[in-house]
Image 1 (cartoon, one colour):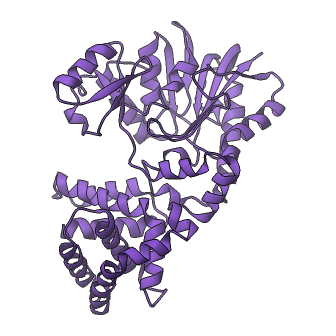
Image 2 (image 1 turned 90 degrees about the vertical axis):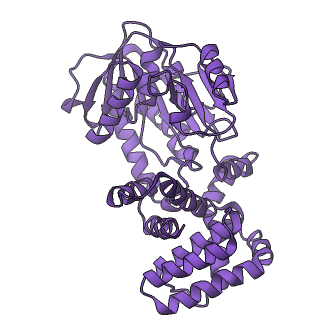
Image 3 (image 1 turned 90 degrees about the horizontal axis):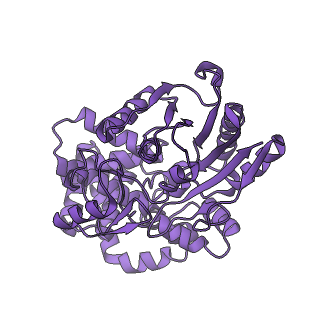
Length: 423
């Protein structure tokens, strides 16, 4: 656990300094190839738990630390220690002992004693400290105060449920590859493997408990994909018929791309600005036995990649705050800033305007985000409709919210969908 605690605290420190957690963990694995699978899993679990509860942890540390300017590396070590003591399964004495050893490795004699004292004080005062934290808004909801205020304004009835969902462990759902098996047949395979699951919609499956993909029957043979149930609506809403030219404008990592290809025999172009991420898309297509024309390019600059042949359907799953998937990426809560939305808005508008010119008259474009912030969603679409008189927003099927806004719950993440028709 010693290595796990050290690497987890380093990862948390990196996030609090502004870095993406997935990138940090990937870099750690690359630089420390001797780490065992169980150690990598423990590092991720400690880091995720710390960031999921960081509002409470930060509050507690402000009560226990006499010096507000504590070294960030030591503060992050304390944060991961408190996370393990409050929500982990390891013995408290082991957590404290290993944290002290890590402090010693950081060449800080003073910190060694402080880490020991702070963590033991937390154990003695845990109930009282947590009760105090419950009265602080950031600590209670484990979100920045500005995020809490924004959710309260946007969703007066649902805001508490949205925040609570963001702090839960996410569900694991699958999409059956209809070109290789059926939903009923795959459910039977799961049952035979001892995995409890239920069918959802036409191709979705919700697992009772998350499992590694190597425990999923036929995963590497392409029988299924891991995909959130909310994300599975995208390909259904695109509704591409056989023979159509379809563009998936921001296609990595390829979940929606492959779903589109599973549903119909189409000519699909998958576009993404990141060549490395396109390799991951190709890997997914190969596993599933599917083919697409993958191109590297910026969706806001069609002149660099478009052949001037209009598309019948376009899926614009644009870059966004990712606020609807915060429970899968808890670092998002602490990385985002209110000022970020102006940059996202400019990027989203540029992509939407550019892609509209690539759409055939009579065609449809599906605008999608994994955000719960209205300024990235319907507010954005309303402005687009003013700029483009030839655009009309279509109603969504009755099984989806009329607003197009899916809020995170125990089945799916947060998404927004707007279907636009071109005159």
